[in-house]
Length: 112
Length: 116
Image 1 (tube, rainbow over the protein chains, first blue to last red):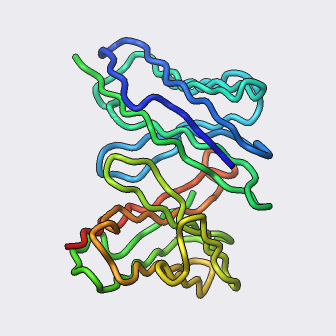
Image 2 (cartoon, helix red, strand yellow):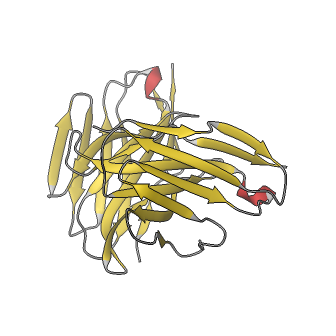
């Protein structure tokens, strides 16, 4: 099956950098996503990695190592509005068809 | 991108009753996904709804409890049957589409269900 692990909670200071890690196990890996979810709202797409390496997009970067089953989301110059849950999701093959499985999410609190 | 609407946005229901949640997408999509998100938890896939065929249910979810309809390429319903307080959750409809990447998932605003 698919198994995804990420820390439950993190706290970081406004203006700082935070790294949220995600490890996964899956069959037929076909991409890893990061989503942001503010309390009471639906998840929104942040990033996608399918090849090894770093994808940078403004203040947000995401890294993937397929051989290690590992990814991280890097948030720079943290702002108070970055307080949210960050969901790691892996696309793989289960039961003969493609499926996206979400991790439990990391609740990030940004403090002044 | 895809814009998704859901009805109702929230409801409070009595134990033993059923609720049907509607999901409407502004474009035609092959697969629609129904997720459940219990308080403080992540998303759990209930089933994948394919137009013209039976829905595919994930382990732990059965058709009798969560019947799904998919009458066309832009619409789906999820029914939560014979509800109990354990069914209190947010139910989200989702589709895959071409956004910033080809297989980005777009989510509806969710239906917040409370069962008394």
